[in-house]
Amino acid sequence: MIRNILFVIISALFLATLIACSSSDPSESVIQTAIAQTQEAPDVPETEEALVADNEADPTETPSPTATPKPRVSCRDDDVETYLEELEFMMEEWDDTVTIAESTSRMSLAPIIQDMQNIKRDARRLDRPECAVYLQDLVTLAMESEITALLAFLTQESDTVVSRKMNAALTIRETVDQELEAFQADAMDAYLKSNVSADTLEEEASKAEPFLLPDGWIDTDIPDSDLTISHPEDWTPEVYGSENQFLSLDSPDGELTILLGAIHEGGLTEFESDAGRLLMHQLANEDNDYSYYNERSAEIGVYNENKGYMVEYTHRENSGDDITAEIVISIITNSGDEVFMLVSTTNDEFSQIDRLIFGDVFGSIRHVSADEIGGE
Image (cartoon, rainbow, N blue to C red; front, side, top):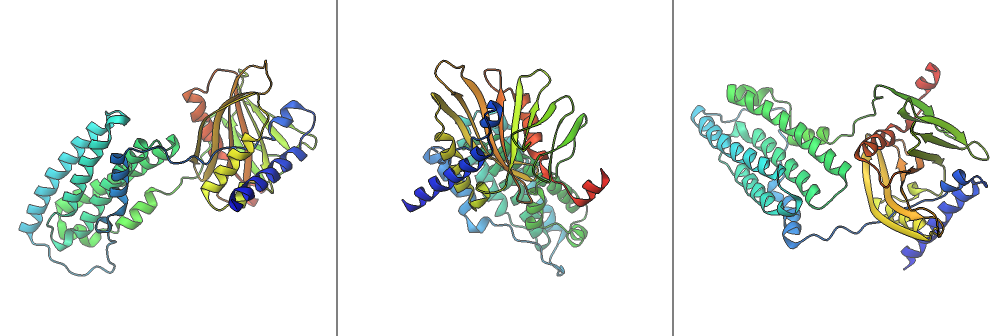
């Protein structure tokens, strides 16, 4: 009970901070809204819950890092040959199952993931020479990463999370294929020369990538901060607010608008947990006096090195107004800065291309370094 009261109080403080920055300008008052929901985990059928737990809770499945410096180990030719024959057969079965999974609807995916987990277990238990232990760890990691990505899709995690996990799985698999090819050519030589371990490969594949400015995009400073944001060069930026503390970005056709402002206190950074941050976002939005409100989704996304707490909804400000689609999102950068954004469209809903553009915009927010300032 105390925790819930605390959330409400913090939410009110956050709103008060935004409201204090507002004026009678309608576009300025819009950005006072802070939002979103701590979504409970989607209802997952027992079979899906078992799949998730099975992929996370088996301690025997944890890849072990390759020891350094590497000791001399057993690597008999006949043992290597037998191992590679069995592994090749298993990888063919794995790839066939993945192909089926990629063309299967979400609701029919659970039994296929179960098949993948069975193959992973069999691969992990293959008899192998000592020089192939590291390769076994890498193969298991590649399988685990693909299962994890499919589980994220099955349990309806956000598109950005699913995409990130799928990209990580692809990166891991490419490296494993290279290691396997080297091992097939000369097992002992591959063992001695490999500097890849399951732990380091997983960490590297999951690392967030820094933002790279797309062609045809420009940078614009965010008012009242040392942050910058990037956007298509044909978008119109405009500083507004009683103290010029907000920024608007409008698409050339006028269909899309992004309003944003830097948050210095009373924001989501006061919470350490993602659940608490998302809950605060929701409570603040639900406190708005809309005549109509329908939350479509609330999720946490990763955009390059930034993390976003997003709610997509439709609402009507006052009775008789049109119902509009909006996205409200708080971005916390990798340097701990926070930016509140409100995205709106004049269309009935956001298109897929809109969402792709927003993802790049959200990921572009970054701290302006001294070098960048000096280079201007």
